[in-house]
Image (cartoon, rainbow over all chains, first blue to last red; front, side, top):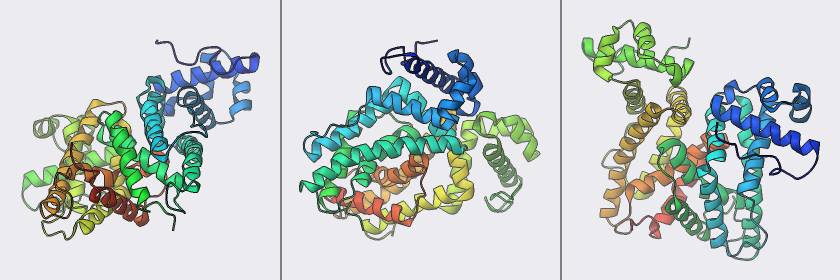
Length: 206
Length: 206
């Protein structure tokens, strides 16, 4: 087995609680990528992590919440949300597209993501995990876009979240549906096209 | 079990060959939706269709080709490609978005599609079936967009296939990643935004 990306100390420095979380998230990721969401159970994760099952239930409740936490942790570590000083709207949208690019091409996050997307077609828990993860990510990025709207870079009333979704869409479409490589060109074009439409007012909320 | 959409006579009128094809595609669809691509075997399809296994292997070769044929048949029946007299580029892109909308919300095609997309994350055959299906669909629609480019409605050099992909992307992204309803508003906005970017030259091939 390849070493996973979550090793002791990468999650948060500290005591026993942090170590438990690291061990559980790493076990969850390994189970997810090796066996898929459908066969992931709290029992298996507990066994693999060497942690009591009740501890895992108490902390995460459901496997959907466990997987949401895993996705959030992988993303926070490798693709942090933008700072408040993110530059022009052109820079922000390009940074957003590149963040999506890095996420889907990251071997750990990408494999986790594809497993969850596949499972979400037939499992409410996986769908809930996906939804919760993207809701948070899109909200984080939308704040930066909204600041650009307030600063007069885009027409008043532009829907930042919708613009962020438009930048992401072509990358996920290539990944999941067309099954074609997603590269820097894909990211740059997606950001540029969304920006043109946004400047023309195509993302002003009705 | 709900009656499948492929009943005798809907595929092509005619003799024994057409009847075999109808029976096999219907059985393949039922297996796919009930059991998933991973557990779909030529043997199971043969048994369900009441057709000899060798007939199925001779005609389709692999389950990937069988599933590609199934997707093509479902699409041709319910979401035919555009005619040559499809109207303005605005009409064409809206018709394209509505065709994608109808496809993903169609109970039979939609369920088949989601099963194949899920399987494609871990199976080369399913990925090949998806790729072959969308390659053909995008090419069909791109011809109509290319005609609009030649007619001067969009900047010279506009990449019709890329524009068609851009119209589809937000719909599939909502369906597969955000797990949110895809409706007429989603379709209309996607077509309108892609058109704005296309008119500004954002789809001119480099």
